[in-house]
Length: 248
Ligand code: MG
Ligand code: MG
Image 1 (spheres, protein in one colour):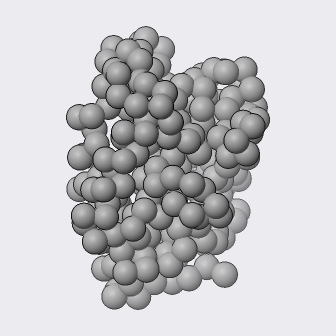
Image 2 (cartoon, protein in one colour):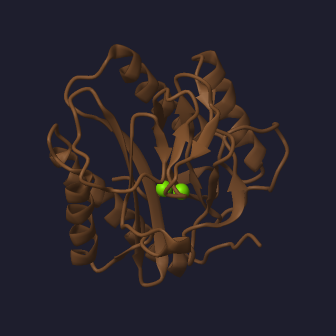
């Protein structure tokens, strides 16, 4: 079931989304060579809690950490660990926060020091593909319009689209209906209506989009170990477009 949120609920989702955004801004300066991903996870978790929220992902379907931190060929659901970031890595921090029972969800890929120009392009085009997808959001359009636009943009830039994972509704659960795939057919899928809240999250790869699940049963890694980027915002469908809840 797809829920239409009331003004009161949207205000709470906006609060949660704002804490997610602020956590990204808080953690960004710490993303440097030598820091462990455990440390990034600890800092972000403390920040989320100090802002009257709880980390959405901790315990979600059994995920053991506050953040998903995924490096290079890890697409999503990376476990924080004693692994240190290296100059030239790209690292995705997926952050979720829950405020008074309502969630916000936003993932973002960051570079560590100086990265190869090919990775700069992967990041740039994946971020742009998020906004290309978001530009399709208005009442009357359909979920398939979002995925179609993302996949078309990815193809134009010769990037792979990971199809096994997708965006989703967001509300009193961090993952709700509908699924929001990063591919699709125009004019198909659930109708977008004012008050729907969804997370759009393209995951694009430099090489093949085939993936496998790590032996930890969570982390998704590209089959050919090519690097992957991931950008995500939670948005609410408005009267004539959308409002980003996990932005400024
Ligand atoms: Mg998400
Ligand atoms: Mg996320």
